[in-house]
Length: 553
Ligand code: F6P
Image (cartoon, rainbow, N blue to C red; front, side, top):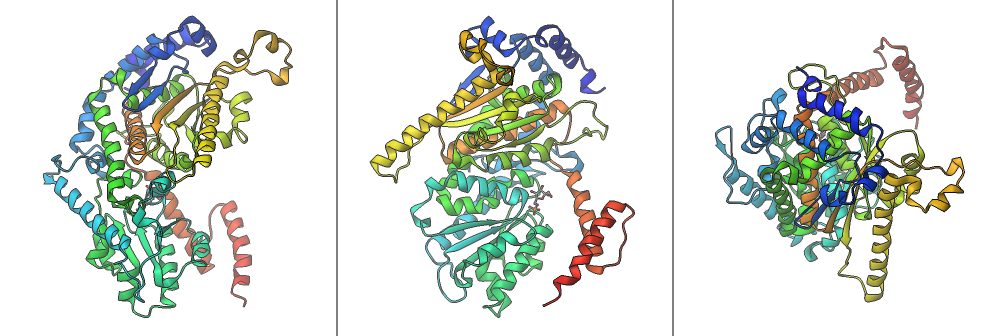
């Protein structure tokens, strides 16, 4: 039986029709001045306010019955104990083990993995130290000044997002080390970087769980050719200018990477869950291993919270339930992630992979077509910038959209002079004011302004409000709090997958695109194949008509 025909689901549908459909957020807040108290959680240095969702205590009770009915407790225990919950690939999904303390014993498939995890962290630490101390030298004997991470998807977005967010926590030993990220298959990002880099002092991290991703391999090939302009020995080129981070040791060996330059993780870590593994090397290079371990500790804090707190006190569970309520009962199809902090610029991109690649599925764990909505379209931008871009649609458009507002409260930059520091604090207050104001405006619409002012407004100015949002505040943005925030979203995704009965750890849809791209590439280079659809064929012919020009000098 589909979950959409289950007692808890039907109860929610009936409840929506009877109690919520005709009730606005404005009314809900008027009826109950203790909404914030009832619908917010303060845990550690984090606050989740989910009171700005169109729901009541009764709604929450029904949602909690839904997760109970779906066996969430058992699923959480399967997640943490390494059961093969990634059923289509017959694997565990044990990213939580990567952030557990060193003395935590974890076994997967009868193998003690905790020790291996620590050994790999130690290996990573040796690499980080060698680079920081200038002992890792390029072919001409000079220390490394630039590290380029070549990867895509989970092998790019996590390190990119975290390095951008945590730049202020740069370790003294890394103060002269420049970190770069290259992902796009077209080679444009790499070419632009290479213009400013020197072969003598550049190290490439080839970051790929599979070590077979064509985007990454083609950029690696371009990097090799660039290095080969100066380095004649392939062995020196690879040993001194490349590190591999992957779960595929055989492929790294086959490509000529020596053991010392192979940083390993495991197939039971999904690509989009891999920043906690050696894929986080750029983060460790920026923060040092101490800082990287803080990130892990923050993730682990959230793991404990998620596993041990009752569901009605549980941040990720509440985040998930608000999403389920919005998507499956209120008809919300878009979800905006709006960090009010420029340092979290890449968080929406990171979360769009985490959520949409995990739960963007229409088939359940048993291979049956689902008859309910799963993951909404997730996008976002730094909130204050988005206010001047796409918020108009959130405010007055025709789409119901849910939003996550995210902000640190304290902003303090150690290395700033006092005057600048004061200005930074003032701007932080402005930022927070905007963050709080926008969720209030979305909730109340015209009701946010005084009655007499509202009366004089034209239809163009009419503002309905009633857009739901959650707000996640943290004391400050640190490696620890970033770790907790990411882990909270990971668990949110997991809880939703349990309700929707889907496997969040595979991504078969992406594979078909890769296969077709291969055939299309062959068609472009061979100039022969034909496609049985006129659109692809027409596009191909246009491409071919110019391809011959390219070979002209
Ligand atoms: O194509 C999707 C994907 O498989 C993601 O899941 C993954 O993060 C990305 O490609 C990169 O894969 P890899 O790390 O194996 O290069």
